Image 1: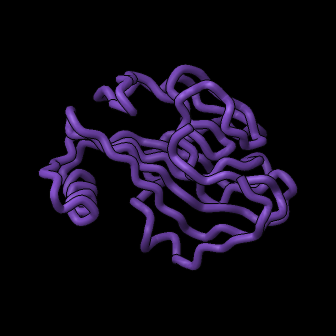
Image 2 (image 1 turned 120 degrees about the horizontal axis):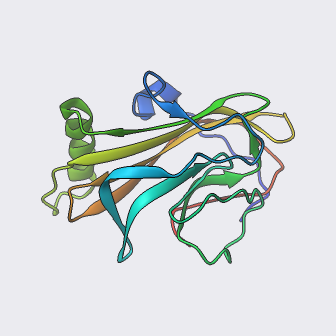
Length: 180
């Protein structure tokens, strides 16, 4: 957990999977979440198989229920994936969007990345879930963050990619990691 300022200096379009066009969006709401999203393919996460997911506006994904907690802590007792857990408010600025993909262009792109990062694993993606927080404002209104989490599966093997665009400095509490 941190209370430090940081900035990732990558231009968002170069590091993020395409988003926006055709994506679904979470409601504009402080501490809001998506409705239950039924996954087109089960996702294996540390020995558990999930068929649904929630995209939460405060920078995290959960599998069993929406989770509005904005203050990061590691004792939530739930499986949670958080590329950037902090108090975000898309009611001030930004969008939180998501989509599932099985098109060949997206599958080829993510398969190439996984094979590059894990050359000893023979992998071919069959499904991708992409959640993007695009220029979502911090609760304070001072700054915003752009980042993405990508769930990837071949049906048997799963991976999680986290991509970061512009992250403005903040004094808010924040936490970055993928597991509890």
